[in-house]
Amino acid sequence: MSIPHELIIFDCDGVVVDSEPIGNRVFRGFLAELGLSFSEQQVYERFLGRAFADSLVIVEELLGRAVPAEVIDRYKQTRDRTLREEVKAVDGVMELVRDLGVPYCIASAGDHDKMRATLGATGLLQLFEGRIFSTTEVPRAKPAPDVFLHAAATMGVDPKRTAVVEDTVNGVMAARSAGMTAYGYAGLTPAVRLAEAGAHTTFEHMRELRALLGLGLAR
Image 1: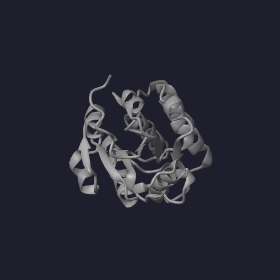
Image 2 (image 1 turned 90 degrees about the horizontal axis):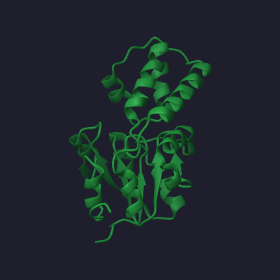
Image 3 (image 1 turned 60 degrees about the vertical axis):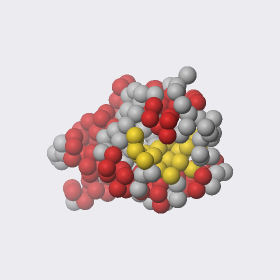
Image 4 (image 1 turned 120 degrees about the vertical axis):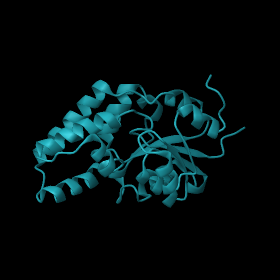
């Protein structure tokens, strides 16, 4: 059985690297420094799947003022350092990517520095080098389809023949808006919410995605 897609696009945070709990903790520290108190769940509900630029707009609206550039720089440095020290690859993703047999790439709301930190720390960078796309390269972040359309165009594949693996509502909506097939990874976001956002199907472990893509058992 062959894979029914010509390109597989992976989100980065929460899909190929288990970075969301770490990022959540560091982001809550950033908010606390600004005088804003959010629980872990509140951060997930308000900011999960958003580009940092869009999250910053929300933060500044809450504060009623701009966040100083030095505070932003310090946050990003702390975020990337902590991720390099603690992040792990999502279980089963490395074997899955190696077995795909069709073109693949990453398209994320994260910036390139963050992705290089997480992918480098987990040994995944070598698999995705030269095929990493960020919403910082396009006019609009998810849930707009821009980054997915940019990735498919660069990879030379029709969006209709492209699949996206996403773990957030915004990401699934972006994939559907791009005319792509969305596979919803129900890690932090409940499967029902991903399905409501338009996921073609949902799964809870990469071994399930292997079957959905027609790869069979891991070697």
